[in-house]
Length: 333
Image (cartoon, rainbow, N blue to C red; front, side, top):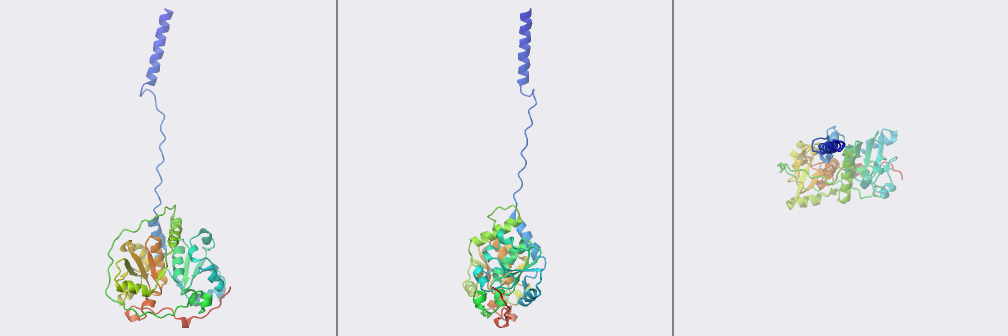
């Protein structure tokens, strides 16, 4: 009897173990769900928004030499002056109190660490063109920057201090037209190649990528005229002046996008073509050109704008730099 009871007990134990092992008879430990991957940062709309924070603030992009001289004389602590010429040319002579950040280094963290975000930053270059480009980058990064009009050439009429030949101020006298040219778009904007964590990193990264290409920042009016005469299909020209000035006369074939609207209307531009931008004197053209370069377009600013092309204001021209009116303010070494 004991042997029989023992056998029954063994069979019951075996049966119980089998039931425990059977599918569905035990609760499985819950599998931890993987957290959803964070969406990748979309740099393009963030950079457009950063540009528009500046463009839509009714910006004053330049400061005259006379006004900056008054700032220096008053030792106005609300301003910081930054000279972006080469270190060699900065050493020839610079505005009293100006620090030096060479143009190609404007997006380096060490350079940005030198800027005071509590002050208005007056940016100084040779003629105002590259300063306007730096101005665009720094405004997109949240600084309050503006350009010394005509750069050191508008401060002192001494080539040995400026570092480059003083501009003549004479326009080429090329013709203008009044027939408007409509943009062929819309086009898809270029895709940004870099991957960034936030808008500041995107602006810095795209600026460094632009400098890595070693493209000239400007194009002279003679070369633009050659493009117009040859009807170069690989280039598109954009007039970023006010519509009423564009209507008076503009470069043949140029479309019109106001400089403060360029972030909203860049899809009018073909990303497969080079872009030539021009304004009145080269300053707002430099800002628009730099924004487009940051967004992946290959863009050049026409040097001295319409004032280099044609000076007849009745035909849409502009009067620009006059070397005879340079005040020759003091510099230091």
